[in-house]
Image (cartoon, rainbow, N blue to C red; front, side, top):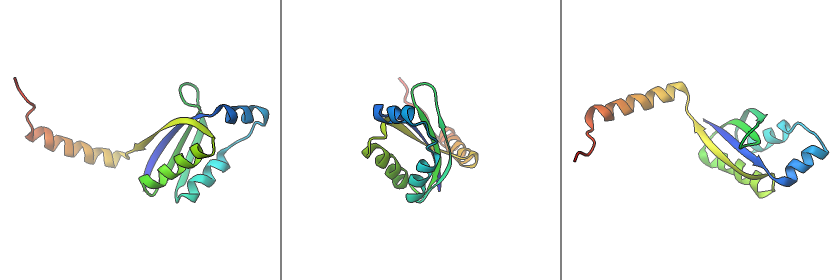
Length: 110
């Protein structure tokens, strides 16, 4: 399973609905994540470019894409960004691979 960060921009209608009827959307987000085989780690309202941040553990890239497509299709979001996150163990493996490349690679020269 991989961990993903989804940063979403709520649609105008979603923001209007949340203002008219303030509500915690954690259960709704959790249902979408679980339906696609994942586990919700947490969700937060955010300041700045994105309105919502969701961290979820998902079985595949396709499962995470299903979450994003679903919330977009029904008009909840007006945009967003998904980032696949690496554990520190995965990061160290990536660094080790990068070191092997750097040790054996020469950039182009003039």
